[in-house]
Image (cartoon, rainbow, N blue to C red):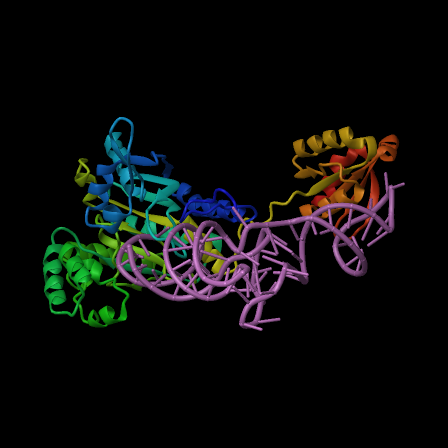
Length: 418
RNA sequence: GUGGCUGUAGCUCAGUUGGCAGAGCACCUGGUUGUGGUCCAGGAUGUCGUGGGUUCGAAUCCCAUCAGUCACCCCA
């Protein structure tokens, strides 16, 4: 029983699994840099009101999941529950819209939501977030989706689908919303769900309880009620995706948890994660900038959950980035410790990943450490070797060992490791 | 916020009707004083999640609580 443990809903990422985490971040961000997206960092906490206005008062995220605190100056601040609101704030505050549009940004960082933890859902989680701001070109929607798919492809991920739909805009959604509300009013629903139908009827469509889902089979869907502009936009997005050779599933009942989404909306759903199956998702948010006091500019982006992507890789037995072992392990004997310390530094400086047996445990213990380090070669160096100007180079896989001149050791090892 | 399951060694887990706290793996030492991975011998390791109750006696039964886990609501 230890005194402290990681707070509820959080976890530590330890080696060797942490190398997979680093590989995930690299694989997911590399395609962004080749597509003109610039890295941005924003604070991990923001004015509470930013999230209330940006994410939406009616969302669960804002109404019950925020880590909100008052600082010593009496300000109400909140640990960010998602990344888009902070990026939009920076976009507006620094008038990035004054330059050429669209502005393309990405970031990676921690997010916090006070939720009951379960598989794939934690109170602290990491997302990679990408945003293209200031253009409503449907080709940009396709680019954003293609970038996510390229990232997954980098990682070798296969068992997921792309769920796609359009949520309409300010012109067509209100009429649809009324129609949906009228439909929902006729159903047998519990009080909670009824309340949700009043506040945000679209979200009821997402209900997984069989008794509710059964009643929703014939519910009206947004994609059948799009106005001409939205329909044309959505058709264009799908055409670009097709031309890029990408596939997706129409998901007319797809609902996202944040209020700011408009038009194109998508989610990447993996089949190996349990109930929290979405590994990433996003969409267009054409009203968000204006809502936060900026110019009336459109935007589109996605967030990919790093932790959930890790779970997805695990489900597919993929371990990108694994390895990371040293190549060479040095075993000193007798009075050769100083020589071994210097040799270690020399090999490292020449680019050979090297570790040293610490702790003076004796030859047997040091060889055991060499074996467990995963190194391909052990270098045994003792008084006799130094006197002869050599070191013993032992191949730990085959057990073969021969003496190599010390002054040519770097070259010898590089040849053996090549 | 609601519900199910689980808490015993570093890890995976046994533990009988309530009667001395166990195994495998891992770790350490030695067999082999200049050689690991195999083998043999030996060794260390516990708030039985925590607090209370019942009992001569509790890892075991009862209550509470905390944590983990999965699911619901919701979301990455």
